[in-house]
Image (cartoon, rainbow over all chains, first blue to last red; front, side, top):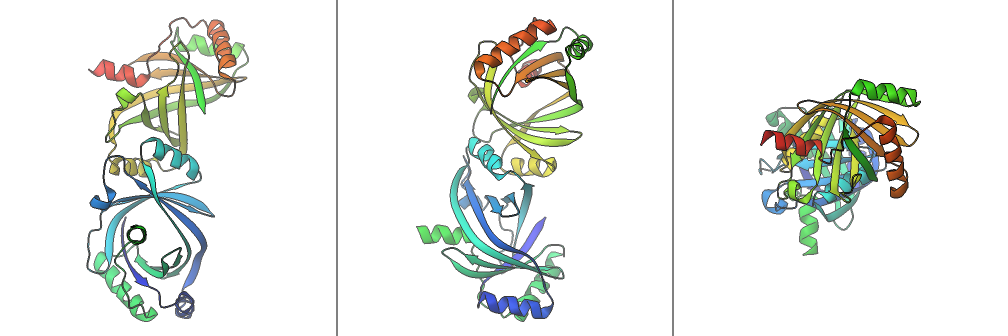
Length: 174
Length: 174
């Protein structure tokens, strides 16, 4: 699936949640998550703009491959392939035996809402601050962007953040 | 888990099944399976004696990493890490995006029995013939070998086959 999404610096997560509830959005999940990012044994993911991530939540885990970003004009699109698993430790052991090395860990608390076809993730990221991610999953890329723009305006999101959390963490640590 | 197992040329799969039933063994599964083996993007699994295998059965799928064989004196032991998944196609797509290439496909029909702590897999392998694999999972390595030897004698298995199916397939095709 191609995911079209935009990330913004949050003007205040509480404020965003209140606005979403007013718009009739439904909360679909809320809780901490830990994202392990892996380095490839022979490819520099930083250069190829790919990522392999194992996400652990309280209610489950998933392995995600992220392909290179396709657009850079505000909204970003990239291939994402996600496999749910009920055994993240076994998944991690296999990945590590294959030569992938844990490179970064990112912890955040995420509260997610759905508003029709739009998904809004309200994130509090350890060491980075508060962010809001808008994502449309099922529409055509053009309609997706229009829906994203509409939601952006409704929620008062002004500061686009084109970097991934991983890029921000790497930048901060170096 | 360290798996201790021995593989033999079968003196006739029907005969083996009858002998097992007489010994009081219980059939635990029966059906076709397809094993996809992958080549590593930067490691020669043939040289490192490792394997990455995606097994598809009618009732599910699993990804298995196999480490190098530890002993070569008849019974073989190697680390195996297995992750069950209900979505083998997604698993395969992630593995391929990471640079692993499908190298061999092995199809077989396997009928499996348990006899106390012993597992017996009776295989009919496409292009290779009939084989019987004995495996003990929970005992100490020394006791495992004694149990394997006992079962070998009871079932009349004489022709030890030290090669993996994958090695036999590669040999046959080259």
